[in-house]
Image 1: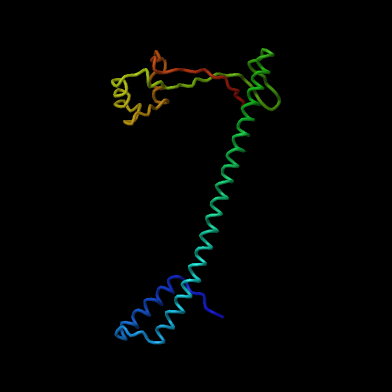
Image 2: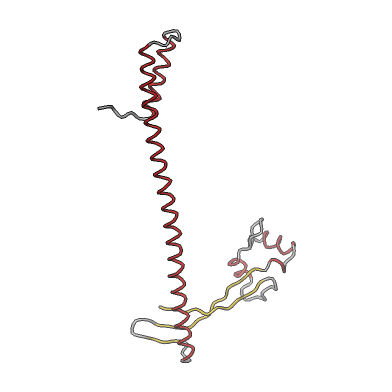
Length: 172
């Protein structure tokens, strides 16, 4: 039975063959030639094994990628179902004129939240620079909506901010 060699073992053997060749003043003896042939076969077998493993790993990677896509779609479907259920509960409470309902398990109440949307087209460079200098935006100009919201809380909201009001169901 043939000993399985690592790739490093095979490379070490090539270095040994090279060393023996140098010691023989470059003369390629039958023994050195036989050792080269054996090492070439070992290297070929090892490279075949590596390539099979690489192909296996690539297939595993593709499989995992397809599963990521599958689970991302599944997650999105479930998230949409949750949203539809919550909207149905809000609509039922509104139709019955109930802003809050207490049950044996949960307390339901209709609440509102604000979503701030940044409209960059409505601001000039001076406002951008001011927001950056106050730490409310990055130099590549990415406004920090939460920080801007805190800065302008209980103040007049600038015209370059749009405040959308959304209903949501709070369950405790």
